[in-house]
Length: 196
Image: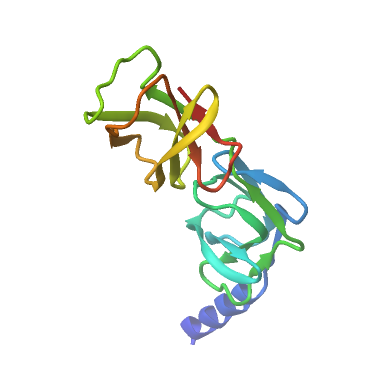
């Protein structure tokens, strides 16, 4: 009888409790790649789960379990950006009863993209018909296009689109002659580019 009473008491205690999202709670703009402190208040003792929603639909887990201490530092992963995001925080024990979602939506903007061309950098003499290894470093994750410029004017396209993996092998055409520069641009953002 005692064990039944304790079980009922435990269930009743579990039924009472609340979780309230404090931030982000709507209107914020968060930069991808930064840290953002998710905060909430609660009166539960168990861990909580934090999820990301977009347009009212589940997007991904931010963390599957973290102590219900009212704060979690979120490292915004690359690849996520857009609008109409909300955070949902739920008890890991009774998620259907103890949960809350951001009152309004917030935005995640991409970080400022940077493309630095490593080779060629200028002054190289390349033979027609030979292979030139174009290399660069960047902090973007979308594909890039590679173009050839002469006298600061567009001359031709080397690659309409290629992986942003820092390297592209180009066979120099036999009919190409003169002094040129290489321009590498994000396929998503024209203002993110590098030029040799």
